[in-house]
Image (cartoon, rainbow, N blue to C red; front, side, top):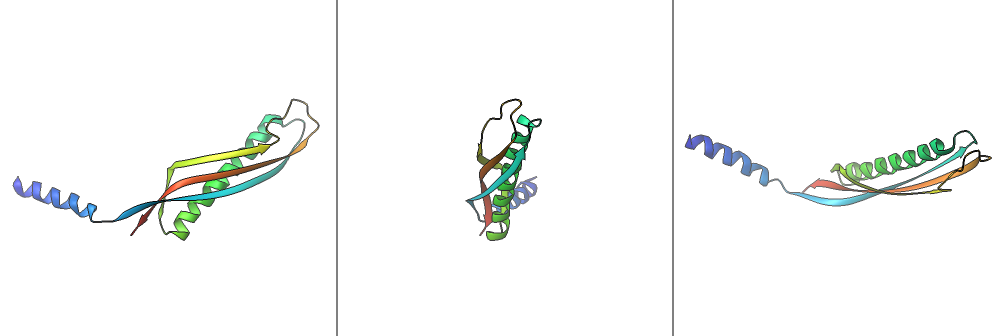
Amino acid sequence: MVKLLIAITTFLLSFSALAYRTVYVSGQATENTYCNANSGFFCLDNAKRRAESEAERDARWSCEMSYRGRALTYTTSLYTTCNPSYLPPNHDGTWVYCRSEARMQCEVND
């Protein structure tokens, strides 16, 4: 029993020898799309989601390629703006511009 406890303790301590540090990476993306009169909210929402998805992908790429790290995607924070931010029903159609910035933690093995 004592040998088992020593083996488990040694195993767990071996993981603490690995040195990881956490850095923050960011990414950004834009999306331009034309929303016609019938698309309304769905068009605006899709443009926003595409910009956010691309910004998150850009941040993840920065982590994996620039730092050779592991992106902790569950830590992602997003800031997104769209212009215009609202499309009234039965509008004549307009161009929508969305810009998104993503920030996430990146675990780097030193």
